[in-house]
Image (cartoon, rainbow, N blue to C red; front, side):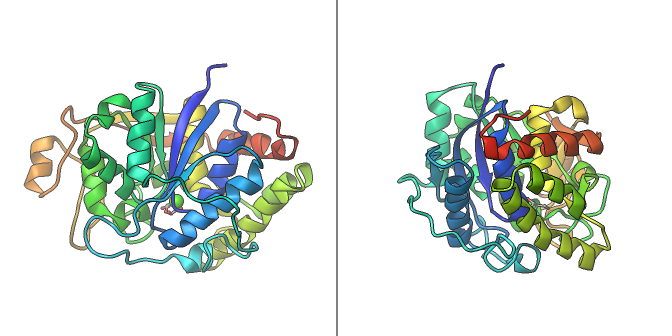
Length: 326
Ligand code: RIB
Ligand code: CA
């Protein structure tokens, strides 16, 4: 089986942590590196959480973690989603004290250098605000031509947003970066709330994972506990939505998703900040934003949620054996 080499740009964050555990155990993925960004919690916590999680989930794997942006391109990091992910970012799990230090390079330079070393091979998986990817484009525009692709957990095209009625959190948290990233000439797959809100996992789902893999699965179930409680209290749901893991599964199992090729741009200011809309480049310019030169992005618009949950379950259930799942 040909491995898919990836760099995960992340703001762990509970669902980020679930996505990282999936990526480290997925048979089809080679995790080349992890880069951290501000978002669910501040950059010090997202970086500590990423380092600690990698040491816990794959001891000895030595996957590099490069620290990224503490602030969005414009303005200051406004939102600390402690009420969603816990003050420390990983629910009520014990706070990690990582033994390893972040990589010497900043995230955007790490991305550009690793991608340039393996042109056409590496897929960037962005599951937090897009600040680091925007810095990477500014640092080395060639990166847009050297990546194999960019998978982004972000946006809400035909469904309401989750941070405002118009916008999904990752694009809202740094709309200027989102506009630059969506307008760049790299192959983008957008995994938005249109599909991720359909993937809902109840407590018994995680109990099964914990029974199958007591060590890693037990940690995952503890993470999910806090996250499910948020969804129960704030959305009346019986489970948590697997936003970030769905983006990784869209890469390993694309057949489980319905995709449309659409011209998409993002509002960068005002009450619709972070909102994505179908738009040809000239219309986007009219709204003070930008769109891809060829005008089309692959937007995932539907999903077989049960099969996505099955893939996630099978992979994480094998996490303790170090077996490579799906
Ligand atoms: O809107 C969902 C996204 O925002 C996820 O990436 C979650 O981790 C938060 O960052
Ligand atoms: Ca995230």
